[in-house]
Amino acid sequence: EWHKFKTSPSVAATEFLNKSKGKILDFGSGSGRHLLKLKKSRKRELYLVDFSEEMLSLAKKRAEKLGIKINTIISKLEKTDFPDNYFYAAICTAAIHCIETARKREQAIKELFRILKPKAKAEIEVWNKNSERFKKKPKEKFVAWRDKGLRYYYLYDEKEFQEFLKKTGFKIIKRIPHSANIIFIIEKPSYQV
Image (cartoon, rainbow, N blue to C red; front, side, top):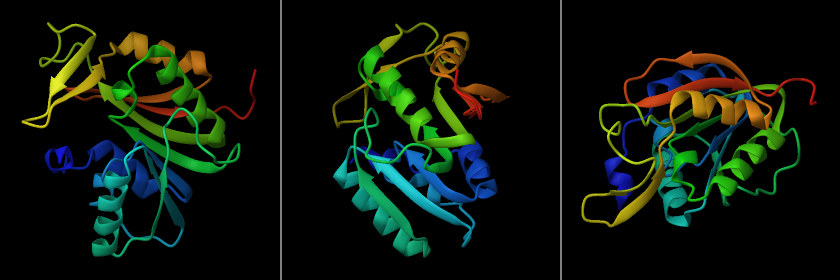
């Protein structure tokens, strides 16, 4: 039931989605909260990927209520069944930092890179280790979700996250200032080294 606590869409993610066309991916979508402020468009085809069948079921209900057509796929982020170079754009909001090992976090980012088309952009957000809420906390942390147990988080600092994305091959296009999150617009280059 923790989906009830994450109901507001990310402003940066919503703005990014509203400018995007073609096949668009919400990578680690949860219950689809970023659909809430989405402008309807026939020029975009939305795909939501999450490991939780329950969250995707909630996303479908939310989309139906809003009159938005979506495709939902149950999958871990580290390995999807999409073909290479499939998506024109993606968002990945508050998902990567929930993956429990460095190896799996890297696999997830490499998977995002693989399934984005060359020159495709993505908006990506993780919690900021240096935010007021977490600056005195360890980098790896279990956070209580009301009375629903603990969830794992890996807290990045900005430089570390920037290097992590570049190591995977992404080009950082823009940093979006935010008090609690690290937010980047990233791009898959048209050439791979």
